[in-house]
Image (cartoon, rainbow, N blue to C red; front, side, top):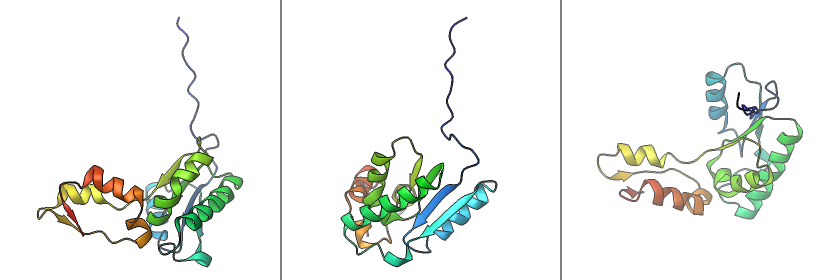
Length: 152
């Protein structure tokens, strides 16, 4: 009989919480959706209200905050991290993933793809912070999913 590979679980401790953060309380809507979708999950939420708003901060500042917060959740034993902030995702999620390559990390991005697919006029609107709109991540999102529409 051939050797069957042992499948290692991605989440080592299933009882561990999922960490969720935003620059403020806007991420509470994301937290609520997670709670509705995964009612048996333990959740930790951090609102970085002492440094709100992220949108006008430098990318370097946002990266630093993201790493500090990710370190906190990792030290708390979180099994995954949800970055419930477009601006933090745009500036910092790649750095968090680089620091913690084996940790499941979910980021938030403007819904450009579904908007571009659904538009009948060829125009979509995006409400976002300056930090998100000026990021390379947002530019790549537009190139990938909205090259055939006008984004305002």
